[in-house]
Length: 138
Image (cartoon, rainbow, N blue to C red; front, top):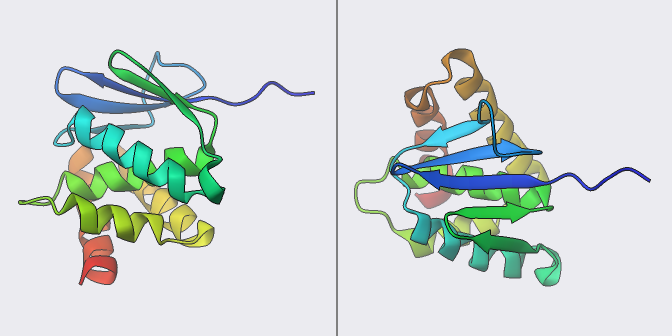
């Protein structure tokens, strides 16, 4: 049997880093204007809405570890959009992210991943966040 894949979200120096497998090396994503408290609030809300609360996560100091790839993807989409909002409407955004089906989540995550991987610059993901806000937040 294969070992379970783990996903890490680490808060360091006012930035949130997303890692697969282990929290060292180059991160998958880096977000600047998303606080760790809003990330934890999002993780709590989203984990209860995913598969009847089966998405578990573990918090230690300034990091979050989960084995749920779906939770990892939704948290990345959440952090991407919340960093571009002037006055974050976290409740409305969480409801929109929780309401996405698996295919929509995969679409937004892959768009985010594709844009970020070109130059590894967070500014490249702002158009993805803008499109998400237009389509899902009105």
